[in-house]
Image (cartoon, rainbow over the protein chains, first blue to last red):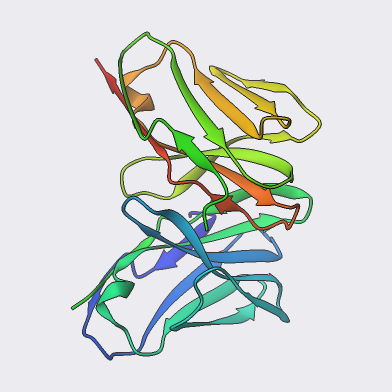
Length: 112
Length: 111
């Protein structure tokens, strides 16, 4: 099994729909992150969490919310999806003092 | 906003040649990391260099860091077709412990 699992792998949704992207990890890490990747723009941080009770906004949090259900689970929600949220979404984890991130395989989201 | 900026945006070389990618950043850092991404897949951590280090090696990878110029380079020696991927630098902007990624260099290694 992958260290960081993202579901679904691909999703097409309609404008205005609520959608949740899920992430679970088996690394035992406290820190989890959500990034989105757009062509030519690299990765941009949406939200991050350093432990279960800690949630922080990243660079581009508008239109998104997150929930840290457990140390191993961190979900990202789009409350009302819009077409410019079409992107590749990545979840990542890291351990304290171990700055290398472990990424999931990504969720390709298309909003039509 | 992007902290790291890679240069060049795209690089095409022949198998066996060396590939050099550069990264510049703007603010102080505790460490700089390089990641690799195969097309549409998740990023894979390659190497981390701390601000008090000047050079680091891992297999065919060599990373340098010049904090006075706020720049880093990633050298892949004796490249292989399997090295074809996008390479990203990432910094912990101001030691914040959350990474800021550049836009990446797309490397193509031709057989």
